[in-house]
Image (tube, rainbow, N blue to C red; front, side):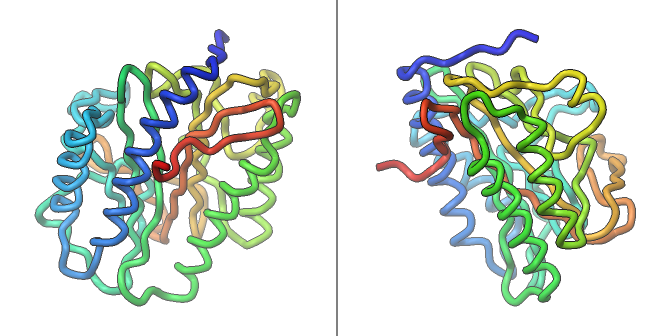
Length: 261
C-alpha cells in the first residue's frame, strides 16, 4: 500500500482547495430552504467552483459500481439516502428533511473533499440527534488523529461514539487518502474490522485523509437504487454524513476544508 506523504507546500495547496469547498458548503447551507431544489444547489456549487478557478471533482466520474457518469457537482442525499444522491429538479426540499451534501474540487492540481448534513426547516428531535452524533463522530476522529497513532484506535473511538448513541456505522463506504487524486491510499474506515486490524495504518506527518463517517439511525444495511448511484438505508430510516479533509501534522491534525482566511 503506497501512501504519499505531502510536503508543507502541498498541504497549503490542498488547504486552498479546501477553502473553496468550505465556502461552497457554507453557501449551500445558507440557501437550502423548503422549496429549493437540489438541482439549484448543484448549479450554485458549480458556478462558485468555476469562479474560484476550481474544477468540481464529482461531475462526470465513473465508478466501478456504475457505468453511468455522475451528473452532478454535488452529491445531494435526502433523509434515507446515505450518499451519492443525484441533484434533480424533481427533488424539492421540504420542511423536516435532512440533506447531506458532499462536494469536492481540484484546484492547482490538488484535491479537497468535505460533506455536511443540513436541517431543512424544523426537523424531528431524532434527526437532530443523528446529525449531532455524526458530527461528533467526525470531531472525535480529528481529536484523536496524530503521528504514530494507529487508525484502528481512531476508528474504534468513532464506532463507540456512534453505537453508544444507539446508531450504526455504514460499512460499505469508508474514508480515504486524498491528494492529486480524489481517492488515494490509505482506506480509513469509521469502524474496526478484522481487515483493518490485519492491515492497520499508522498515521504519519504528511498524510492527508478525507475522513467521512456516515451514520444510520437504524441498521447499517444499505442498498443502491436503479440509477446506479444513490445509496439508501435498507430499513428506510435516516442517515447523516459529515466529512473533512485533514492533514496529519507534527502536533496532531489540521483540518483543511475550512473557510479561507
